[in-house]
Length: 147
Image (cartoon, rainbow, N blue to C red):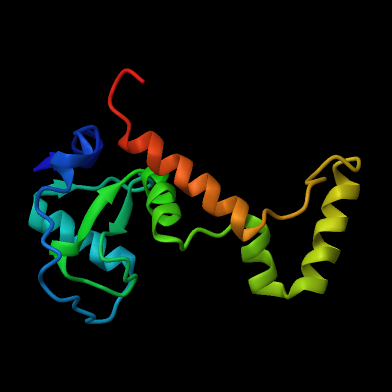
């Protein structure tokens, strides 16, 4: 068996070569930990405890357990994928979703006082601004080497 830390150093194209999105998603229940084990068994890799390797769903269905839709990625690749897919949420958006706007403002204000009034002075980014960021990331990713 190969160590996942060596496997993850391979190029993205090589790590995703086994993907086949023509097959349907399979939702058998479970969570990403069990899907991680399933994929490691199929790819023949071992995952040490505490590794920062993420299980990514190319089909963008977090409940999918089809190994042909799953691949191992880094946290950076996962964020890029979320931005391209339109599912990325800022910390502020996740906080509002979890606690509601008023409580999130209260929590944020407490954090600002604890940090001497310096933390998060700006407002959350607008949807248009996030789309522009996502578009620029796509352009950089698709740009020819050397630009």
